[in-house]
Image (cartoon, rainbow, N blue to C red; front, side, top):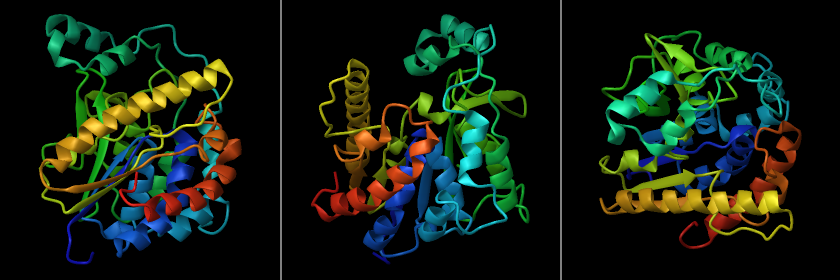
Length: 315
C-alpha cells in the first residue's frame, strides 16, 4: 500500500468507543502497510479526534493500548482521568437552552441548520469540563502549541451558534489550536460545556455525523478505512427494551454511514467500514461513557476487529 493514497476516519463513541478503536489500530496498521500516523488524511470526530491527534503526534497503536491499560507514557494524564472529568453520567445541566442563537438562525433560515444539530440547541447547557483531555493534548504539543501536524488532520465539530459542521485543520476551517479543536469536537451537548474558540462556541462533531466520512469524497484517495464505534451493521438480540432501542439507533447510524460511504465510492475510492458486531456489543453496553468496561472493550476489539478485517469487504 506504500504507493497508494490512504485516508483514515475515526468516529465518535465516547470513552468506550475510543477504547474499541484503539483495540483495532494494530491490525488496521498491518492491513494498510504503513504507520497510521502517515496516512494521507485522517478525519477525527469526538472520541475519534483524540485518537487522530495522538496518531499524528507520534504515538503508535501499541503506545495507545498501553495508555488505555495504565502502562507507560507516565508524562501523560492516564486514560482513567478522562472519565473523572466527565463521569459515567452527566452532571446536572444549566437551566437554559444550549443555543438560543442556533434556534434563531433556524427560524430565519429553516434549511440552513441540519435537524440533528438543531435538536442539540434545545438540550440544556452542560457543565462538565475536559481538564484531563486538554492536559493530555497540551502535553503532546508543548513544542508546537499553535501548529498542526504537517499531514492533513481534520477535526470535526459543530458551530453551536449557526448549527453548521466545521472542520478544524482543513483549509478554510476556523482557526484553532489542535487541543482546542479536539476539546470542541468532544464537547457533548447537555453533558459538557461548549468550547469557545475566538468569538464562537463549538460542540461535538457527532451532532452532525458520527463519522463525517463524506468529507473525503473529493480527496482522490485510493483507500479509506473507517472505524465507527456508534454504528453497527450486525447486532445481537438483547431482551431489555432499552438495549433493543440502542441497537436500533446503531443501525440507523449505520444507514447514515452507508450513505456517506456511497458518496466517497462514487469518486472511485475503495471504502472499508468497520463497526462493532454482536461480540462487541454486550461489552460496550449502552453507556459509552462508562469507563469501567474500558479494558474489556479494548481486549474484545483486539480479537473482533482483526477478524473483521480478514473477511472480504471489511464490513
